[in-house]
Length: 77
Image (cartoon, rainbow, N blue to C red):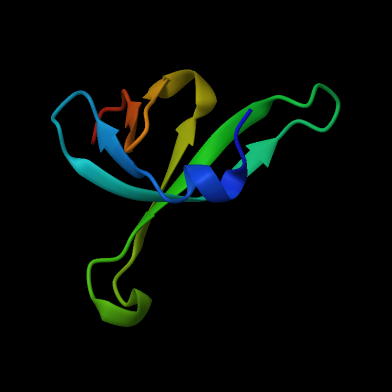
């Protein structure tokens, strides 16, 4: 069992190239099944949220949730 606030403290890392994508800022849940559909990852390039980028990652692309990082498998196209 894990709370959203615990997920939001971990860095998200892409297993494809080892890049740090950012932190989870939102999740999409299917209310009928209760399953997580997708996570939103936000990376701030500058201070105060200026130049932030958002990436939506399907839950199926989450490979592992560890104590410090969340590993995802996505292509940066």
